Length: 328
Ligand code: ACO
Image 1 (cartoon, rainbow, N blue to C red):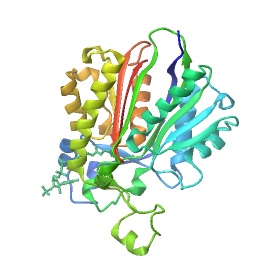
Image 2: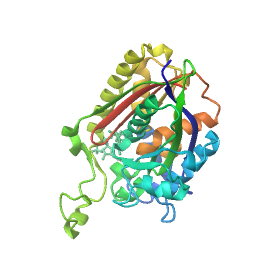
Image 3: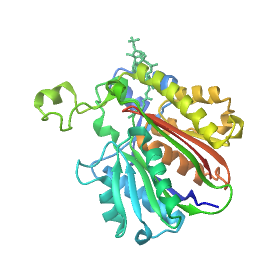
Image 4: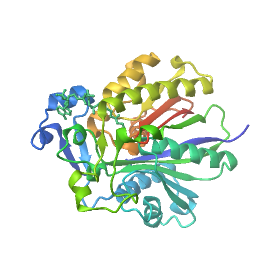
C-alpha cells in the first residue's frame, strides 16, 4: 500500500485586536446590516505592529507541533502560503524556521493568494508520497489589514488577519490521507483582484501611493461570479477524481471569502448545512490562512475523525483556485 499524506496536528493564531462591524461604521460609509447580509462577517482580527505575519505563523506552528508531538528539529520542510510577507526578503518561512529553531528544514513562501494553503499542502503531499517519514509544516498566514485601503468600503470590511498551520506526514493506514489535489489558475483575469504597486514592475512613487496602488483593488461582483464558477467546477473535478459522490462528503471546508459563495456551493453540491464548516463571521476573509484556521477549529472542536471524507476548496487573486479530497 503506497504512503498517503495525513495531518497529525493543527494550530491557529489570531491577533489580539478585534474590529467589529460597528467599529467599521465609524470609519467608512457602511452598516453592520450590509456587511452581515452581503458577506456573513461580524468581526475580524487586526494585527498590531508587534504581531507581524511571521509572528502569527510561528504561534500557529507551535500549536500544531504541540498537538502533533513533533519537535522543531524533526521538521524537514516549512511552506508558508502568504501574499502579505513581513518584507520581500527573507521569506516568512525562513523567519519561522529561525524562530522555531528548525535547523534541518528547508523553507519557502508560496504565493498563490487564498489558494496558498491548498497549493502548499499538495506540494507537501508530493514529497511525502516519495518518503512517508518526512514531517512538513504547512502554514497559511496573512496580515491583510496593512494592504487594505481603510477608506475603501468595498474591501476594508471583508479582510482580516490570522494564521493557521498543519503538520503533515505519511501513513500506510488504509482509508486515510490526501486522495487527490487539483490546482488551477487564470492569469488573464488578474486585474479583477490585485495590488498594483510595491512590486518591481515600476519604482514606488509618491504618485502611485497617492493612487492607492499599495492596497488591494477588487471588482467584487466579477470576483464573486468567477469564484462560484471555479469552486463548483473544482469540487466536481475533485469528487470525480476521488470516485466520490457529493453525498459521500462528511465535511466541506471552503475558503471563507463570503457566506453567500459558500452557501451557493453548498446548494450546488446538495449538502446539508451540518456538512459545511463556517467561521467567516468571526474572522472575515483571511486569504491563505482561512482553510487552516477552519481546519484547526473543526479539529479542536472534535469534529474530525480518522477516515472522514473532507472536500477542501479555495479561490483567490491571480486568479488561483484549488480543490482537495482527503480522508482525515
Ligand atoms: N457598505 C455598504 N455598501 C457597500 C459596501 C459596504 N461595505 N461595499 C459596497 N457597497 C455598495 C456598492 O457601492 C454598491 O452600491 P451601488 O449599487 O449604489 O453602486 C452596492 O453596495 C452593491 O455593491 P456590489 O459590489 O455589487 O455588492 P456585492 O453584493 O457584490 O457584494 C462583495 C460585494 C461582498 C465584495 C462581494 O462581491 C464579494 O464577496 N465578492 C467576492 C470577494 C472574494 O471572494 N474575494 C476572493 C478572494 S480574496 C483574495 O484573493 C485576497
